[in-house]
Amino acid sequence: MMKSDVAAKPHDRMAAYLSDDMAAVSALIRERMASKHAPRIPEVTAHLVEAGGKRLRPMLTLAAARMCGYGGPYHVHLAATVEFIHTATLLHDDVVDESAQRRGRPTANLLWDNQSSVLVGDYLFARSFQLMTEPGSMPVMRILSNAAATIAEGEVLQLTAAQNLATDEQVYLQVVRGKTAALFSAATEVGGVIADAPEGQVKALYDYGDALGIAFQIVDDLLDYQGDTGATGKNVGDDFRERKLTLPVIKAVAKADETERAFWVRTIEKGKQEEGDLDHALMLLGKHDTLTATQRDARDWAEKAQSALAPLPDHELKDMLIDLANYVVSRIS
Image 1 (cartoon, helix red, strand yellow):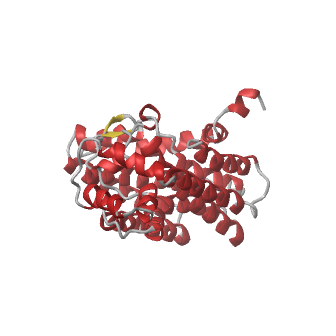
Image 2: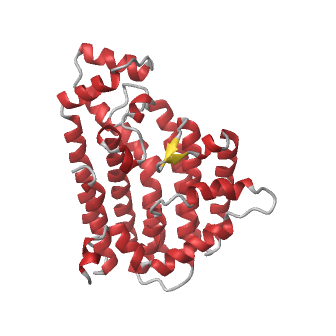
């Protein structure tokens, strides 16, 4: 292995290792996002799909299948299914959150309109269900359809929990498992299922995806308060401005005195934000050291992801998946 390969990010190494499979996934996505009668569908879809995302979730499906010795064609269909579900949720999320930027570019709802984003998202969900039937595996359909339902459930739970100061870490974890980790765990699990891997290995892949997804979301929530806008494509403090009760704030609320709690009630529950409130929120997070505590939680979940892979056979892709869990949390070092 060349020095440049060693230095490469794990998802880049994985993409290179799986380059033929990834190309097949891209071709299938382009084919299935077409529409004879509604040209806006491929326009809106292409804006997100071709935006330079890492396609991490479909890559996890391909890696899991190959690591378990799969030699058939249907891991490509399942990877495309996972990407369509992910893209559909992004389109819907941006409407719900009234977002103006994703991956450093204007959102589809800003460039077109909310109606287009919602309806194209619905179309992609429908396409994902068509794709997941093609391998003819009931376990695969059960896993992916359950994931789609769990994602929607997590998003609805977030609507009720995000601005409620009674939301604790347990509810936060439930939201994260729904809106983020469910697709990670489904992506890895179906890779093992399509390869007809032993039950213990399939469970290990599920556990890896679940823990990786949780770590991924915790890191994303952290970067909202301490990230670089150029690197993340998000403005620092967007979650605060959108009144999202994420883990750093949940930890701060739990330690708040009466005056501090009144501040969180005004800014998060009531949404009465003033100039300087973000700076004050950051000061409170620093006072109670909640960013550091949240970093520890993210690292704990990354370690759980790595440990989960123990039952899997030795494989280059296994090493890359372990490195990927490390990389996810390295972004907050």
